[in-house]
Image 1 (cartoon, rainbow, N blue to C red):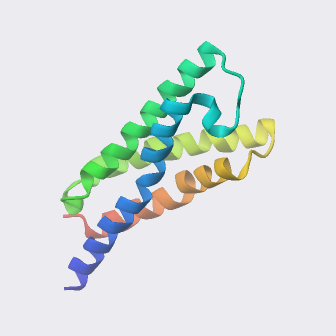
Image 2 (tube, rainbow, N blue to C red):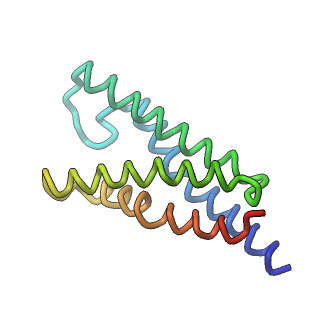
Length: 128
């Protein structure tokens, strides 16, 4: 019963946490750099921003794909976590090289370097 509760709770937490990459990915595709407050629309920058937002959307959808049988998707979950954490390390490098970003970017970095790895550890505890 306890394992079922932990499994179900993790599924709910993944569904909620997944709103971040799915929502930010969609918003980035639709609004481009305006999503993060940049009003200058340079086609190359907007195109690159939309591409990266599409990757973020895909990562969120792939995390969602693990929900129904969360205990059976350890490899996928770990790969996605690695991808997200490497992105977070990129943000951390940017922080060191270019200065502290705004609150939404710090939130993203926290999700990437703290929350997602903790969720991966949780998933590994229920994996079969």
